[in-house]
Structure formats: structure tokens, C-alpha cells
Image 1 (cartoon, rainbow, N blue to C red):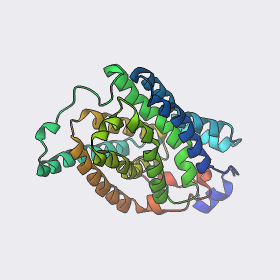
Image 2: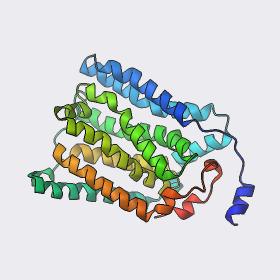
Image 3: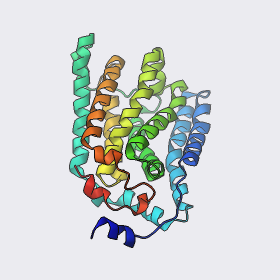
Image 4: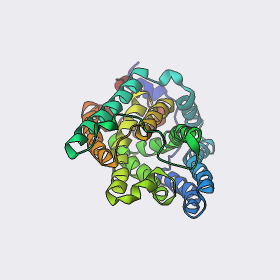
Length: 292
């Protein structure tokens, strides 16, 4: 069956994605909890941060449930529980690529006076107030909850209207800035960066190329949220537990950017194709074009 036949026989859907409204609602219902967390105790702040963390996932799910689109609801279900979608070799490749990024960054940092002791695990997590078990739970929940929000509705809502290159660029910027209030909340990783403005800038800039890499993971597994959850968890864990200095993390952003350029060049059809534009929910060609 050729692509034209698939287009003619696929179920039609008139749902109109609303990316601008999604981001307004996701930011609003995150920041109304995170901003007050700046002014309360660290323990209460941790609770408010967790509630705010839920916002994108909740907003995404509500958008889908009230959409009136059976295709959108079915699509979300398939992306969450469709284990068959996950291209495990591609997920493994992405994890290996990120591990290589970390190793390369540490080795390059030696040129700037950093230490080989960075090839070790830290004893604690960078954020405080929740204990080791709480920190592991936070890292895990962040990967699960964020990806339900960002991949459940958000990225598709942008990708419906443009190629995945520009979608990744827009998403990377907005996703990075979503974290902004955290730099003012005591006990967060982001607040620890305030000792040097360069570290703060590096944190927000680094989110942009990472947006491209996780889009690659997402599309390569036929838009599987599970694949993104696994990769997101590994990234969060390694970023927390590998004893890299902030200077090295600045080097890491450069390495991540270079790797992103390579991925985009190698997978240029994935990032620049427009066959899905305007009909993302009924487009069935991705899994064949975007395998590893």
C-alpha cells in the first residue's frame, strides 16, 4: 500500500492543536506554585515544586480529554502504553551518545584545569531538603511527569504546523525557560548556579540542543513517550551523580551542541520533512523513515 493510499484510507481528524494556549496554561499552573516557593520554607517549597512539576502533564492530559478528538485520545494512549513502539536499540544508542558526551566533556575540561576526579559519583544530589530517597523519586517523577506533558501534547502541537527542526528549536527555548523560577528557590540545583551568572546562562542555553536530541529519541521510536521517559531519566541521573564541575558543564553544552548538529545532519529527513505537517495524527510513514 503506497503513501497516497494510506492518506486516502486513514481516518480523518479535524482537531486543531493549540500550542500557544498549552504553553500559557503550562507556565501558569507551574509558576503559580513555583513562585510562592521562593518565599516559604525549604520543606514547603519542595511540596510546591512537586505540585508545579505536575502541571504540564495535567494540562496535556486535560487538553487531550476535552479535545473531542478520538484520534488524539487514541494517539496519547498508544504513545504512553505502546511498548511495541519503542526502538530499544535507538534508546540504547541515545544513552551511549550522552555517556560519550559526558566523557568527552570531562576530558576536554582537563585543558582548562579541571580534574580527573570528575570520573566519579557524587555522594548526594544537588538539590536538598528531600533526602536521598526523595531525590531519586524526584528525578524519576520529573522524567515521567514532564514527558507526559511535553510529549503527550506539547511537541505534537508545535510539530503539527512545521518541520521537526523548528519544532525542536521552539520547544527547546520554551522548555528551558519554563525552569526559570527554580533559580530563586532555595535548595534547587538551579539556585546553586546563582554563584556565577555564566552557570545560569549555560543551564538555559543547554536546554536548546537537548531539545533536539530528545526529539530524535521521540521520533525514532514512532513518538513513544516511554522512550523519552527512559532517556530523560538517564540524563537527569547522570547530570546529578557524575561529579562534573560547573565549568565542565559549560564545556558539555558545547559538546552537546556539536553532537546535535551531527544528529540533525545524519537524520536530516527526520528533522526537515514536512509530510506530517497538517496531518500529524493520521500520518503513518514516520516509523519507516525514522528508524535507527
